[in-house]
Image 1 (cartoon, rainbow, N blue to C red):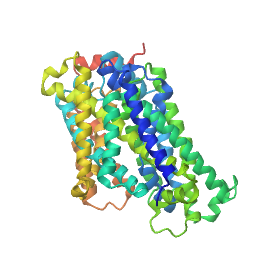
Image 2 (image 1 turned 45 degrees about the vertical axis):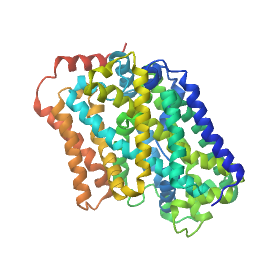
Image 3 (image 1 turned 90 degrees about the vertical axis):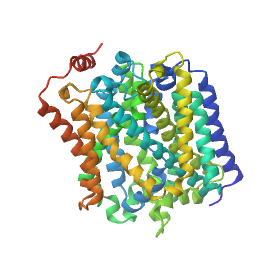
Image 4 (image 1 turned 135 degrees about the horizontal axis):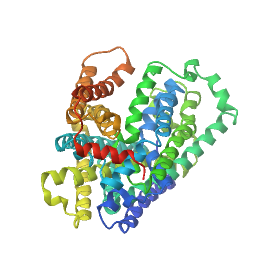
Length: 489
């Protein structure tokens, strides 16, 4: 697949826009609070769009395109629908708690309150494990963007990593969260335009608006099923619980969107906007992917379906826009992760290593240096992508396994029902969740739903049981925190 000169110009302009936004955002920051949580002044519509865009990467157009080709409509049910529902239903719960934590306990990192809620050991266990694994996870995403660049432009993998990683390094280091949020908005606009163009072109190719319904008659019967093996109702329910944890703050970068909101009401509105986008937009985005078996029958590699459709159906110039949207999704996720991980390092890890890092006077400088060095480290990891091979894949799967077990004590820790769940419950739930993950990798459980859900289920049960069996009243500082968080002001 070769792009025209005009398409390459469109992609180049997209990268230049990202850089320009970073430079503009530089002047929006005066301290670390501006840099990490936008000074708590993030408008609800920007927060909601950023929360939505940060939730999925270029994998949607590759791996998920393959699943849409082979498994049809069930992809929407277990992925987009479960995410949208969990966000909308809990819009007045966890977004509200995150805002209260920033206002009343002055947090800038999603882990900052854990020292008070549990203890320093628990917080540091979560911080170090999450940051270490994210280092490799983001490195793999730079490599994924480089692969996309290579497929569409012929640029070598190292040069692709330098382009995507280098531009992101500059705009994130310059602009902090404001740069991430504004680039998310720009990337959202690119994605909407590109997605709508593809939707309309495919509709026309299939015969018009009526093909939205008649399409399924031309596909295998199972492609229109709500649940399609191995993506059963059990799998969807497991994913529902995992997404409940992940999208309410278990993925730290998504918690930051709520922490940065100026009020509880605006945080709830942001959540509802993100949730509604997940319920509606994927129906348009996935349509060309669902139609691919008709337009591209007997494809050897279904993961290439969206890329091939782009090259075959779109005119010069618009192809570049769609390709830019592929990069936009992954860059949105990586830049969002980097900003939040830098906050964890700056606010949680460094002060525990040396109290000098608590100095608020130099907080912005420390934040920028941390961001620069962490991003650089992820780029260096990306260069070693092929050398790591299966090891990197293993590390990434471990990160996926950690999301649930870490999210359980984080999110349940702010709910008064679990006030007796202290450090022992938190650490036990993380460790038991990881042991359950090792068990699922060592034995064939015969069920994808069980394999996916076991670690987070074990983690949740352990957290509740250890906490309830202790029968000890929480320390006074924990009780005061929970009482404070429960009260609306």
